[in-house]
Image (cartoon, rainbow, N blue to C red; front, side, top):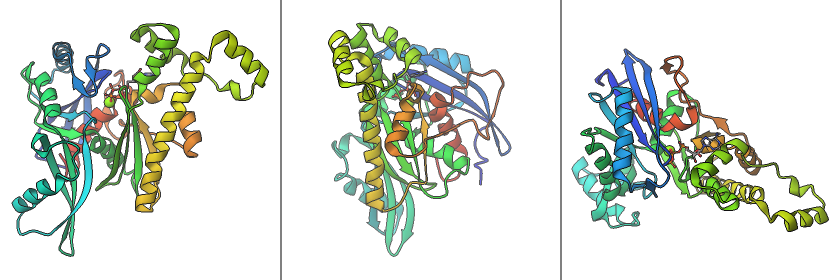
Length: 360
Ligand SMILES: Nc1ncnc2c1ncn2[C@@H]1O[C@H](COP(=O)(O)OP(=O)(O)OP(=O)(O)O)[C@@H](O)[C@H]1O
Ligand SMILES: [Mg+2]
């Protein structure tokens, strides 16, 4: 069930807030190989809330990435930011033809969008047809968001032919590796935020954005230590979240420490991590309540999870293990590449979703 009509070479590009990731794939028969991976860091604030504000800088970095991957002639697959992305399950009456269904979805979607339907780009996937009903997965975003990404590509005369959503890309990895028996959750901790996606091989049941990502931790250190963004980001990567000693400390000692050092960045980093963990828990709980089903496995991805101790804090809160999603499993890759599985998950998932049936 592999899509054999696909061109032999194709490249997936994920423009993230912290960096652009590119992965060049080669398909040999039914096997997927990674030819090359590349990553270009972006200056802080060139993308804000998923929108590229410094198009010149981003397209320059994109150009360098394309040169490095040597992918100018490939089919290009890319993704859209998670901000403003709407994913909903809808049920409609069965219709004679799919054009009418598309029309009906458009009408119906008005109730689901927090922005006018005229300013939206929509797509849908038919999940099932039973008992005169059609189950549909609606995906929508603002047209501006898509145009903004396209502008960056157009500036270097490259036109992506597929735009997929990140939750789908991440679920594709789990599907490709046969990790899904029932329902799984994937938590992607990027720079601008954290996304929780809950789904299976066919459907996305929940997709949530939490606005705490790696940058938020960096900002706490910036303020506390009076550093610029890059300096603070380095301190963060070096030190991680400190141990929560204060709970074992005697009250007097704690008070005397606060008196001399203030509450301290360590305390604020712990609080931020706990806040994030609590919001993740709330998303999982919401799914459990709404669907009355358990989540089989919880996977993690994104550079933000490399923050030392963050994983433990989330695991403690959820009371369950977080599994690393290894996007390279079952995909051939050249030795010596800088693999960074956390950061490259979305880009590799975009490529994988191209070779899975019923997608792309
Ligand atoms: N070793 C590390 N320790 C702590 N944080 C890290 C480490 N390595 C990377 N990060 C953080 O991970 C984040 C980048 O992750 P990632 O590349 O997944 O984000 P992105 O895709 O660019 O952003 P987004 O998806 O939010 O648009 C940054 O905040 C960075 O500081
Ligand atoms: Mg990302």
